[in-house]
Amino acid sequence: MKDDTKSRKAALAAHLKAAVMTLKLRPGDDLDEAQLSEAFGLSRTPLREVFRHLAGLGYLELRENRGARVSQMSYATLRDFFLVAPMIYGAVLRLAAQNATGDQIDRLKAAQAAFWETLRTGSAEDRALTNNQFHEITGEMAANVYLLPSFQRLLIDHSRIGMTFYRPNQDGMGESLALACDQHDAIIAAIEARDEAAAGQLAADHWALSRDQIELFVTPAGLDLPLGSVERG
Image 1 (tube, helix red, strand yellow):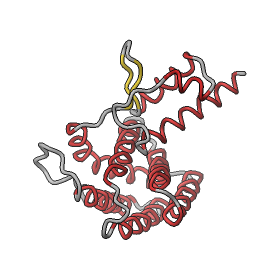
Image 2 (cartoon, one colour):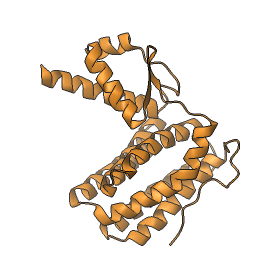
Image 3 (tube, rainbow, N blue to C red):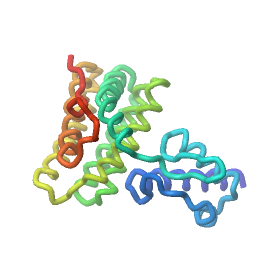
């Protein structure tokens, strides 16, 4: 019975993570505890254990006497995102080049193969999820207890921003996705070679590609600086 509950909790967590990152649950949406409890066969206690776990990762917000809702996004959070994203991505990939294990590199290659496949046959949601999986593994590789929570939250909002502003028919969007995939291959090669400098440069290049695409559609109000850049060298 414990194993069954654990499996149901894992299924609920995976469902909510994917729904948040692909905007099937939008920022600020309230969660329907009764519906989720019935759908996943969970009582209130294990259901709320999942909510607490996801709140700790940044997917949800818990409010006293008002239940859980999807974490908000605002001009303030967008501003913070653009300011810190390049710094965090750079730190993660440099540390990944230092610390990655062979098993993690194999998993990163498998995640990249899945991302390639979604570019050919998948939906925008599939691309967002497989891209996120790739970057989550680089965060594990970095193996830094202070950096990982910030990186995980960054990935959530990066996915949501990407889903918000993704335009499949936009001129150059397909080419940008192909270039992003090529950069993933280069990131794997740099990590496998333990080339910290190359990994840091690729973080700069990869972030610049994302930033330039998003900048076509949004510039956060009150942002006095260009959308974030990674220090090089």
